[in-house]
Amino acid sequence: MNINQIAKLAGVSPATVSRYLNNGYLSEEKRQAIAKVIDETGYIPSTQAQTLRTKKTKIIGVIIPKIDSDSISQVVAGIGEVLNEKGYKMLLANTDNHDEKEIEFINTFKQNIVDGIILLGTTLTPKHKKP
Image 1 (cartoon, rainbow, N blue to C red):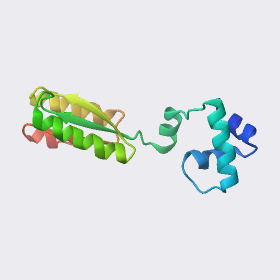
Image 2 (cartoon, helix red, strand yellow):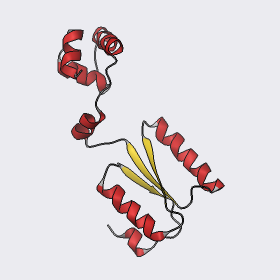
Image 3 (spheres, one colour):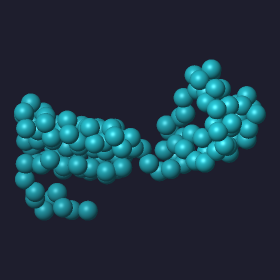
């Protein structure tokens, strides 16, 4: 199932379905027609297609020094709460207090699938600041 098929079943254009999926302006009548078809078909938009179009993954990388720390778990819970409210997901990376692992995760996150990085590091070295 794709937006062209949803559009045909709802009696609207694919652009209208796209506007619906991206919370754009639509008449209430069209919004209800599309919602009904999506509900009946169980359609789930492709996150890969959205990422290609928007260049956004809605994922934030969070690098932590130690996963079993009470204070870190409280901070991570707070970060998760705020990210969820904003429609983001969290990708967590545990470094076990190793500076080099922090650098590795920073580089991995910069090269891949995150829109931002939150570093709860143990120290801040010149390697951390390197672009």
